Image 1 (cartoon, helix red, strand yellow):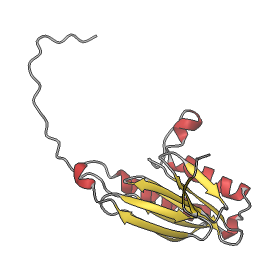
Image 2 (cartoon, helix red, strand yellow; image 1 turned 90 degrees about the vertical axis):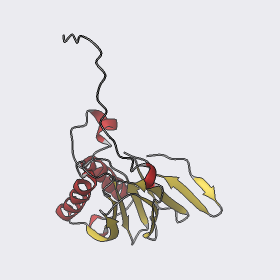
Image 3 (cartoon, helix red, strand yellow; image 1 turned 30 degrees about the vertical axis):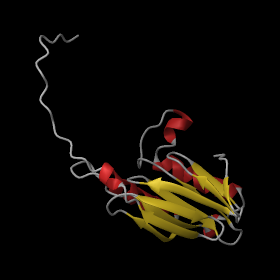
Image 4 (cartoon, one colour; image 1 turned 135 degrees about the vertical axis):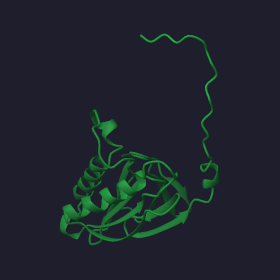
Length: 181
């Protein structure tokens, strides 16, 4: 995925949005994203200094075409792994960090937990070592990742109160006759 880098002094920031991934060997690049129930895998080969990040919305599903598939973990994980390998990484040296999978709303299916469970299972099945991260919990987080060094920093998103608005069902007004067809 090609992104325009925002240069803040010596550091180049690249935002990785939902359904996207980015791989680099540039030591000045920091990748960033904001996660709620989504999960981001940060992956790198520490020997050659290449790595990247993805950001997926749902663990698995049927995506028709490349763009639709990007939202699913299985596709996002494969893309990132393959692009790190194409950039010179070796599978046996890959190390991952997993972030996100937060529970965002009470009373709804816990998509964050499903995403986190999927990511851990996927990496275990692929034989890729998880060296750190922060999965599950409540609410969202902002993530910064330096793919060449493997450094990661996260902060809790403090503006979740705007998301935690109780939804109350309102009765429908009688609109007259209803015709089904």
